[in-house]
Amino acid sequence: MTDRAAASASASASASSSAAAAPSASSASSAPSASDPAAIRAHYGVDGLVETELPATPLELFTLWFAQALAAAEAGVLHEPNAMVVSTVDAAGRPSSRTVLLKGIDERGFVFFTNYESRKARDLAANPNVALLFPWHPMARQVMVTGTAERVAREETVAYFRTRPHGSQLGAWASAQSSVIATRDELDQAYADLEARYPEGEQVPAPPHWGGFRVEPQSVEFWQGRANRLHDRLRYVRTDPDAADAAAAPSWTVERLSP
Ligand SMILES: Cc1cc2nc3c(=O)[nH]c(=O)nc-3n(C[C@H](O)[C@H](O)[C@H](O)COP(=O)(O)O)c2cc1C
Image (tube, rainbow, N blue to C red; front, side, top):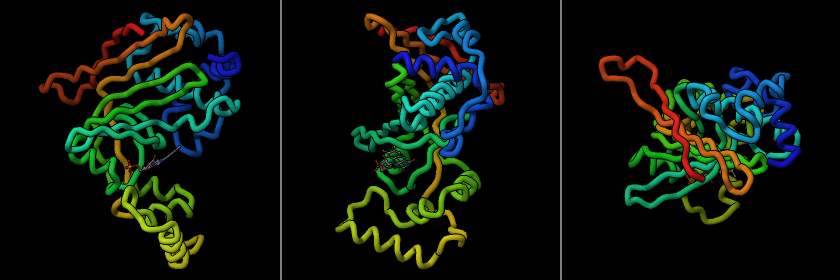
């Protein structure tokens, strides 16, 4: 971690779970709450990860690291802290990756929004296995998630769509994401037609072919760069409760991986 990022991480270190529990475009630009840097260094340390001081769930540690990434972004050290690389596999087993924005996180999983007819969505329909990667390079950190993706409830999509800027709402209608188009003009014309139909101030309905995916984590690895390439890699692995007690929360075991 650079000195600047470390300072910024320390400065935000005590951001509470709630401060960063629901990242969104708007929360990404607001600073986490005031902090007690010494306490956080004692608990997790910005320089290392210690098994005995880890929280019980990956959500708690992710929330802390995300708050620190937000603070690094506020300090100009990191761009788009909620950008994550989503990797999917198509029906023929071919992988592909792309960046999307994290728009929600809670005990159920990680949420992003996209076009349900896009390549990634078609992949997920055939194979729900997915990997997420948060590349927080300036902080010498990455978080890697494996799990399965499923569509969020329609009401959740509609509620989120309403919070998007008017232009982004129109863009979701204008773009048949991942399809081949002949020219840029085609896209601009589609947008202009929509703009004429839904001028600023007019409510734009959420497109039926657009919505959220929630990635339910099966494992979450926290990677912290350390000196001499002896990095810390701690991976939470999920154990589901017995079928008889399906309502119980999953439990998590933590294993250390060699760097
Ligand atoms: C920083 C960044 C953020 C992005 N956020 C999203 C997003 O939230 N949702 C989305 O569908 N595409 C997003 N994109 C575009 C995707 O990377 C990708 O081009 C698009 O989703 C089509 O991917 P696909 O053809 O593999 O399905 C983003 C790209 C960048 C560089």
